[in-house]
Image (cartoon, rainbow, N blue to C red; front, top):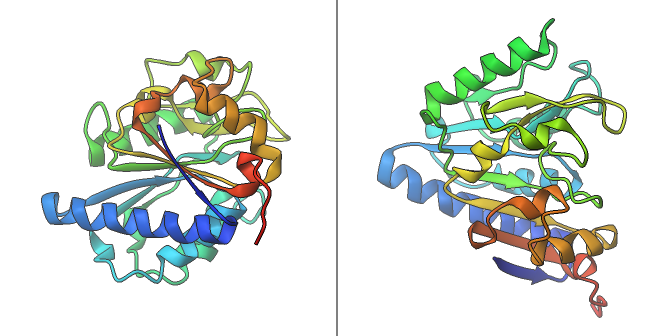
Length: 232
């Protein structure tokens, strides 16, 4: 596991944007396409706003969601709403290249299966995304792979739904998709993440994030998340 520590969340966001842009340029030069899945969160929205300013061939970027809450389209709880505000309002990504999770499907199981087919159509079977951006909850969850949920044991589907968690059921990519990605980029900020980040660094399988292969993880964290005092 590679861990890089920055003074504050803004510096983490800037580095995250730089890393994603670099990965995009490499993938597009090699294969004429870049496949990316993004998570939600305050710092990631700053990161994606910075990414929108990068001079990239956006028509060659295919953008997926890592997870999404089951909520109305205009709900502030929806990651998609913030994704549109932070990245899509400024970056010329074709609408057809945005693959939003169908969380308003009348049957969420069918919706998850439809999203899995979309993944396969773009990224193969099993899907291999070039990069997946992940967050880390204080309880150690990543994506919507949340503690004590049956979704943690799903190995035969690329996309699944969760029980209600913090007010909403979720749709999420599963471990097989995360495990098959070209790169996993964690963005971790805030003092409330100290314990979870320490356990992630110990590869603690008792937290969902700790079940990922540590050799494949790049973690960008701020001083607060590591428990170091910010002397700036």
